[in-house]
Image 1 (tube, helix red, strand yellow):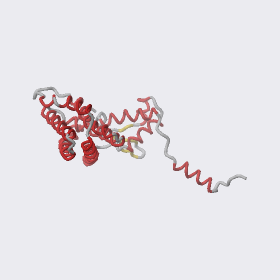
Image 2 (cartoon, rainbow, N blue to C red; image 1 turned 135 degrees about the vertical axis):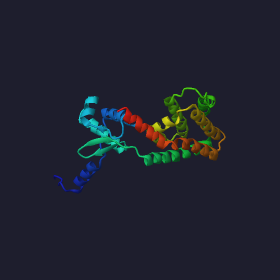
Image 3 (cartoon, rainbow, N blue to C red; image 1 turned 60 degrees about the horizontal axis):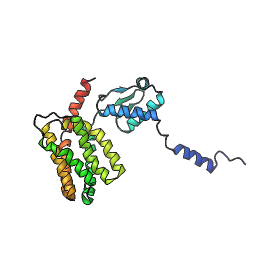
Image 4 (spheres, rainbow, N blue to C red; image 1 turned 90 degrees about the horizontal axis):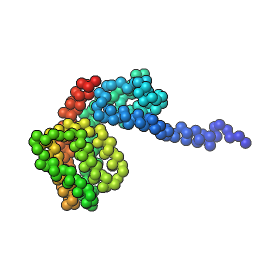
Length: 247
């Protein structure tokens, strides 16, 4: 006997299909997403820039479907604004939002450092961290500073403790935060004096962890993160000026 269209089984099937998550983005959409995200976070696109579908289709030799998937993902990540009948625009930076990211980062890293300080970390991490930062305590006042390289080293320092903890969700969250706050770090680490201070702060965190002193580790970590956070407004102004000057 044929099942009626309004039977319970039929209704259940429709509900399941309607509630099913959307299919994962295509490989091309992921590639477009990564490229656009990197350009936005590195300020190659200034705030307010229009991301036209047709232009992106031509650049990536793609149809509108993967381009739209990438733009939708960027909107979900808070990096673009979708304006009805107009398209997508790179989102204006939000000082409050950046400080909220720092709140999130601080919460994650304080939890992480407290846990690893209680249990200790690997000898390999201790050796690598000392080898990287101890020589920078004596950096010359006139030494050239490679901001990009130092920012990467700074990010690796903080992620190193998260990797020791081994929580993949914390690692993923910190990696995302690092990308979003990289421009602030690039402004902060610009002089030998700041490099020297950063090295001292990092080594203070490390030594507290080696001594298994969670309170001291949290205090040293908070000091280190606050140094960058205090420069948010300066970093934002410089990044905006540079982005608009280049376009």
